[in-house]
Image 1 (cartoon, rainbow, N blue to C red):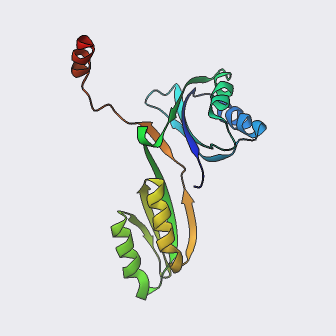
Image 2: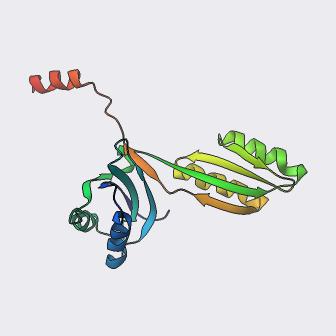
Length: 175
């Protein structure tokens, strides 16, 4: 992905039509979405949307302001790359005959990919990781002829604090 981008974690009510309303908002404003992933959370009343937005097309303050106007939005968090744990899943089918099968199997091992299906002329792999890892694997598989490829889009959560709550209390009392 080129240029600047913003990762928005949007907690919404798990109701019919919420996704289309939010996607419509981006569309009407002319904001480019690189990736959109939606799934239920630990609480079935809510879903989390991870939206990766083109930073050049969408001023982030404007995006969050517009999203907050939508009734079903509970909370919006912008996650910067250093504040987030990001992952993506990719399924890829690669054309391979017997002579190249071991090379693709070795690549799968290096990238910690799982071989899901093997046919006479192709293999389907699954790999999960940072988007850059999936980009690199795609580049290395390209010479073998990629038959089909699907990526989920990014999902992200905020990184956890490395400080215990007791330590924070001690620091705050000393300040």
